[in-house]
Image (tube, rainbow, N blue to C red):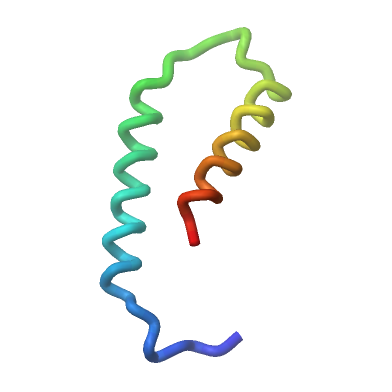
Length: 57
């Protein structure tokens, strides 16, 4: 893997910080749920990955 000196670092950092903020806000909205099993967590993560994959180019 090589470093690309022309990579637009500033826009990437802004987008990365926005995703971190969304994660922080979203995780604070979660409540403890004993019905949220490992399998359900995996299903939710897969759906999130699919949705976020559409947003990330």
